[in-house]
Length: 583
Image (tube, rainbow, N blue to C red; front, side):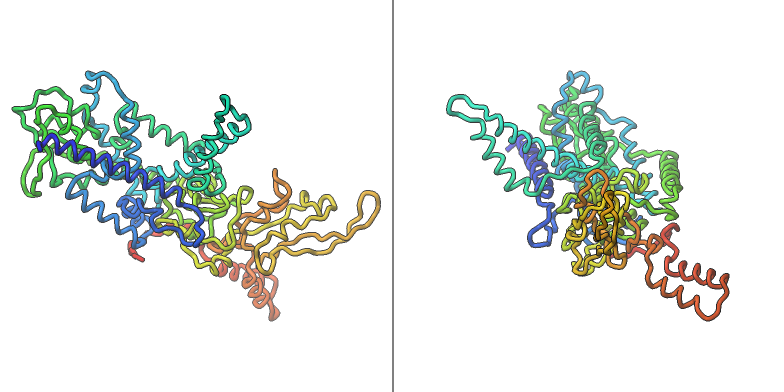
């Protein structure tokens, strides 16, 4: 078996590997739903476990690291030994980019002139430097550009719901139209296919997400840029590719070029996925090579070969050659961006957005943002479609992080799936009993819209749906006089703030669909002491310190002191601690 035949066989193995990992990713999307057993598969966030960029950024930002993320070290070791095989053989976003790149077919002379290494390849390294500096100071901005975060977020909020909508609406249209030619009906094909998809793929009710249009536009731009340059994202923008490129400087498997056999045709260059300049032995870029084997497989004269080189054996290759000035500038830009994120009152914990209701188990806002990678797995797994990506509710720093939107869904009383699928423990996996008592918000009635208050009509919908054993919504009988002078006793609803956990089911089930008469806000959330207007312990303490003949001024001072003690310092300060905990 000749070398040419062997390398072509390896290339087919690489393609099979890419296809297998892409199918595995698609399976994780389908499986990321509320399981009957209550325990989702540990494989749902499997790609994040082997993502060293998420591992490093989480350790820098949160000063803590879930032990499962240490599997990212395996990827780094493989990269040191073999080069960027993770990008060329595993990454599903890279596979999608490769498939779309195959649609780009400019003339050969254009390919020869454009498919080469340029200084723009360095851009991803400067992006990586800025993101890591931001992580060092507590801003987990990796989620914006990490390839797995992009792919999961885009697939969860746009691709999968879009495909499900098209399949369901298309099958319904065909069913109602019932097109047929003689005895052959189109429904004989569409209905079995629809039933199969409903039973094995679209098991849950179709989801729809706020802000999905922007996410879809960004994903479409990443995909369509492959028509400009092959694997554009991987070459110029991907921070994970930059990180792996830093570790792939001297891999064991390297390209060897025989100058005597080379015809300078440029066919190896036009087929290189990373534009690593395989046609120039002394300028070959190992940090850009994804070990796709295209250059060696397409060379008709066998001039290019991949061989095993010991690490100590010298070989002339192009240096990474990053500008120190640009790296320093990237770091400064990262710090400047971080400061811009933190200038708002919300970021400093001075005010709280009433619509920013985090899922139960979410850490304090600063700690949450130091961990969340905006992947959307919690949104996909939510059985009621209650979790949606934020836009600016949490500031730019918190864009695309999850928030609960009661109008669209509610927090299921028995469900803890969001914390179980979170790859970085930004949402802690709570036991069911603890989750049932965790307060994420507080309900309040709008008396200008609520039927008993505003229109003199009976309504008990909210109380009937309250899931607590001892209802957080109760009724007070009130006598009202109607327009015709008739008096009537109505049950007007009230909220017990000591019991309400803010699950949102009352708002979700309210008979008003445009603007519910009962609305849940982030007030009284357990994760923020400063956002808790209902503090029974503080009220009791105020009554205690107010006794004993104290003057009005003394009582007011004591009241402020107790309130400060109950509320704590909040989360406005930055944590520059360097102690990292692995748990």
